Length: 433
Image 1 (cartoon, rainbow, N blue to C red):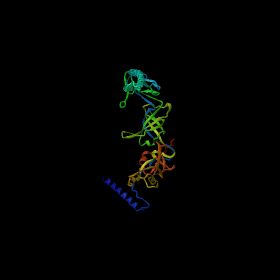
Image 2: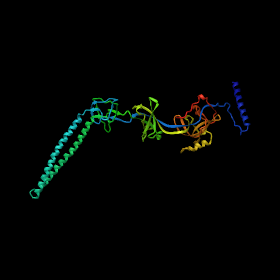
Image 3: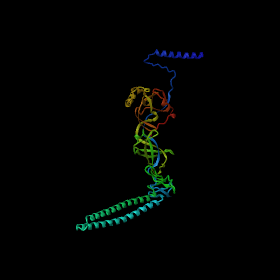
Image 4: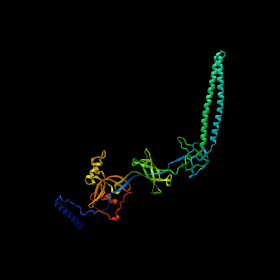
């Protein structure tokens, strides 16, 4: 215990002696240094900025679906008497898919035709009555001028003609109505033969002979018999986040990656972007259609899960560094310089942000190697991709930029001593193709 106290006392005396020696020196030429053990230099990876092409993309997930798809549902209620297709069958527009029992429709059509025949006969009879009433009125009128027929007889003749004409008009209107009912019955009879509306392949065929097909109404969906889809035209319905959708436009190139093969990119193009977002689980997304441009050999199949990358911006031949070389530092942790002041001028305080918060603001920074030390440089960045970020100002082509390791960059401060890592441990910096 006594030995420990003596050792501690000796260290205190040594620190006091060093302080006294420093105080006796000229303060303008020397600065007080209390550090007994200096931090060893950090090993870093260095690289100079290179000119490259940068393609900025955004990612979204979605589901593959056919561009052309028709859901087949009955338009009349009927019992299924025949199913002519199965899943996977290729059909052409107009091919018969399902046959419903036509008995009731045929009966209604026959009834409508019989009513039409009866009304036509009634019309002929009514026309004869009108002609007779017209002749009687003419004769009565002649007799009335000779004072042979009384005014009452003349009025009765006119009434009979009017009634005959009304009966004829009623029969004609009923004929028009019956002809409309016949057309409806004919249409219902046609609906008992369910045919393919487009060319394609049968999918989800679950209808069986003997079951009753129910037609849909305004508030009640009908029975879905099957779907017809075109396997040659596919698209991806993706959900783009609200923070990315302002950059997405129809016609932009895209790449589609399937879960089965995340390394193979299938070319695509943005078809359309929904004008209104959709809120799900407190996240707003915009439905975006990506059309498949992979040709006849495209591996896309309906129902597959896909990830899409949409190219939103491109910059050719710009000064760039690896993305890990750009970090964020607080204003208070950076030395005062003209470059820092210029960066702050280009990024003024936000409305409501107090001047006292200036020291806590984050500044986009890169570190360069100068005389064995890391020096912070505020930088203005532009586009970025998975590997590189565009440098618009703050770095020169001949600067030695610290590009790694990531842990070192995360802890690095201005003025820290550094040493370049051995060549075999430096990450090779290649120009983006």
